[in-house]
Amino acid sequence: MTLVCKNPYDDSVVCELPFDDDASLEAKLSAAVSAQAEWRYVPLEERIARAVACLDWFRESADMMAEAVAKQMGKPLAHARGEVNTMLSRAEHMASIAPDVLASDVLPAEEGFELMTHHVPHGVVFDVAAWNYPLLIPINVVFPALLAGNSVLIKHSARTPLCGQHFEEAFRALGEGLVANVIVNHAQTSALIADSRIGHVSFTGSVGGGHAVQRAMSERFIDAGLELGGKDPAYVAPDIDVEFAAANLVDGACFNAGQSCCAVERVYVHESVHAEFLERAKAHLDAYVLGDPMDDATTMGPLANAGSIETLEAHVADALSRGATCLTGGAARDGRFYEPTLIDGCPNDSAIMQEESFGPLLPVLKVSSDDEAIAHFNDTDFGLTASVWTTDRDRARRFAEHHDTGTVFQNRCDFADPSLPWTGFRDTGRGASLSPYGLLALTKRKSTHFRTAP
Image (cartoon, rainbow, N blue to C red; front, side):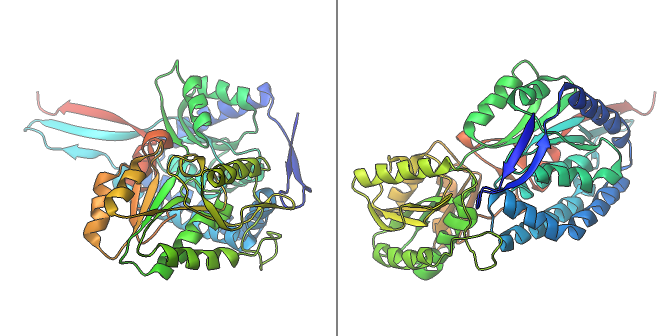
């Protein structure tokens, strides 16, 4: 069998790659087990130094990788170059905190005893990575997994298979088999998760995919990091600079053509600034240039998945049928494009306010108070991020206290700071990446309780 990856802009073939058969998959998994058995005993400081040295491959290959991302999933080339740079900065941050985070904890003990907690690797980490940020998503797992002493099998999305190859090549210098790219179907993926040689699973994708991962590991007692969907809310308070809020929220909704789990997907605007917000948001949405991702003038590329257009059309149609008004956009264009869209008056129980759209939609609902906005924030099945646009820190703290979500922003959105855990509530999944918590998630705890004097 062959995986055919096509350019979403012009439908040209980007690459054709063979699927792993049972024999090649067994060879890669066995090699990962053997490589990890040695790698785990490499001293921590040496592991970190050797892993950091491999980042040079990404630096030297930055242009090639950015072009590959643009061609595989439609991200504008300038944005793809930015993803390479962000990937490197995330890796560098994780390396900088690893010595302290992964060092054994020495605990207070009575005289004659030594108590310690050690952070030991899971073994082979199976990383199932998504296509929308095809460099950032795997670096969040692959690099810290290596720092912690694991080996990694990476199964990248069928839309971005070359990225899996790039990760394998970048870390080849650490030893054959320590990072291996696999190209497998759903049945093979489930079989790998169920294999006793896999010590940890990291999955980024849909809620349905997260349930499939849980079913596959249902007979095993291993951990899984599941980063699933989002329906991230924003509140525009009456005291904020409306132009500032509108510019940032439009970018938060439309960057990467809205194909982000932490994209702004529903906006609640105080009635006192509602009209001005709509006017300013429309101007920013209308300024997008849709076109060839390889053209530097393009600011929004095509949707990676042709089926996404059907979802966006259904969400818009449902909102309009329930009294909402489309102020700009609202239609598909030739190929896999969907216009940046502003829709006002969307009922909070409509599909566009409740179901993940994963496209360049900005649905708005006018509210009369902070309390009304908080109630709408909490009316959701998800919980990845939320943003509050206000100059009042106490207001922002109140939203943070009363809304359960992974990250609450004040006057910022759609950003993952590597010093903070990237995590979520409800159907957004479980576990964490980035920060000390992301490193620790790729280890298990081992205690030593020694009596040092008879």
